[in-house]
Length: 379
Ligand SMILES: *[C@@H]1O[C@H](CO)[C@@H](O)[C@H](O)[C@H]1NC(C)=O
Image (cartoon, rainbow, N blue to C red; front, side):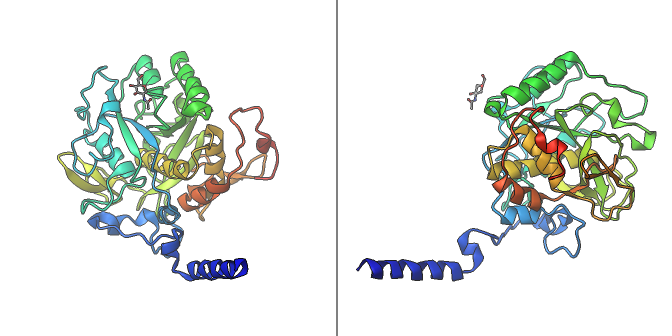
């Protein structure tokens, strides 16, 4: 009798194995009705080569950003936008420019900036509008930036109890004439985040490396980029030309494709599709802020498959998931045998690879000093 039952179980097991993979929950067949999806070349759906960020593969592995909260620090977000309102948590959002709850986009030179960044991360999926946000099931707290050290420090520790990732997609002037030093207050905020955030696993800080390349600006001159705690991100162009606005420095960890060519011209080029002001949709986002928003969403995908990753694990995973992709630059081999370029960091981030590695990653802990991996060639 027992034998029969086992035989029965075996047959069921074999039937399940023979089912098409979507029914088994792996390599999910994804279906979206958002019309802009066809313009999201950087997802890498049916791509002929590796000039994309392999996000489609991460989605196929079931990563959606679910359960992850991202604090977006920018110039305000149109929180009433139809394609955003499901994923923005207004009661956790705050304006650190004016220290109040007015979340409306500020009238800066680029008033739609924050709204664009929010869409890249978390536009709703399957609502017949615009494209699909990269971490389309993650939640976003919209934080309006303020220029003071106090505003920086407070936004970097905003609701540590419920925030996983802080992404800062604005920075000091990009004119090549400005040094933004580390302030004690901001460094203290970072240390508080990496020690107390995410119940001790450490908050994840992501920063745009800046868009002052044209003016000879250097991201090493920005203290909020040039430090151990934040992950600095650069933009790469799909045609592998050197991006005109990108800045270089030793702190850049990784890059993503956000531009078709070296030119990113506001209002003209067709690069990354996202939400814009007055409920609209644009295909004109690109450059290093777009890159930082994308990477924050990719990290959310990784965290959604493994909530136990520490802030150090995330840095290792990003390095291990970055590929050189035949970018026509000189790659220097560092002390542990990894290839690095100061414009692109360790290369182009592969979201699918990061999600795969995250699923089985053995933690390296939270401390800098115990990072044995750092001094072995095993990476
Ligand atoms: C986090 O802290 C804030 C302010 O102290 C509180 O309002 C909020 O409910 C807390 N969130 C969670 C998830 O505990």
